[in-house]
Image (tube, rainbow, N blue to C red; front, side, top):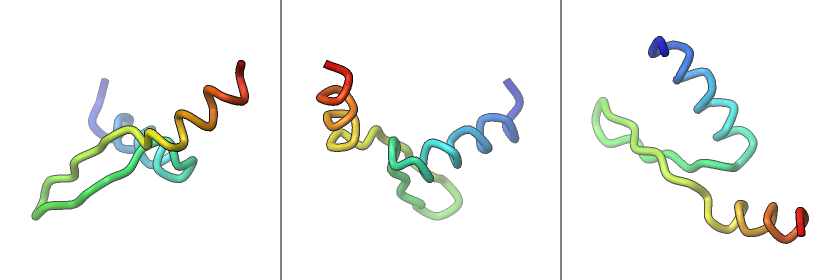
Length: 45
């Protein structure tokens, strides 16, 4: 997958609150938003 495509999808996930991002210099580190994922899990059960 091309880098611009990945960046676009990560942006959408950030806007939805599903992932969080930390920028360190020129690098951005992403992680799941565990609280938001738990909320979704509760809704789907």
